[in-house]
Length: 111
Image (cartoon, rainbow, N blue to C red; front, side):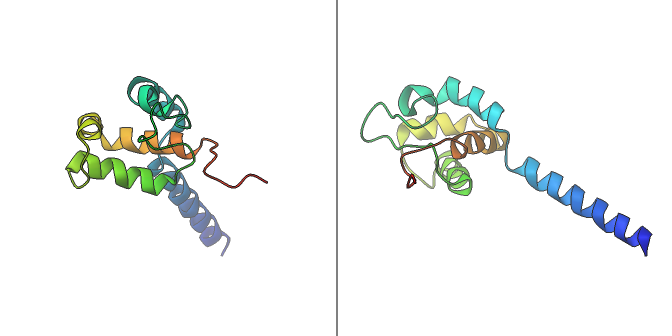
């Protein structure tokens, strides 16, 4: 019985570790964002340089992954974003999404 509990605990720990790694690395995303995104969206994604550019900070991780994937595949159309997204790997997209999702934003109600 004790052996079964240890095996189940180990399996759960491995499952959590793989789920966490699938969410991207925010620090890697920060570095990539500084190279590709900061000029239009701001360093933390909260200060776009023009009103037609969205705030990325505080957006949902899954939404950012979906949108960047859609720009990359052509399912979403914007000439500038398609060019940037075309060069991104799946890991880059996950890392960028982790970075922007982790940032504070005025998009959320502040208490």
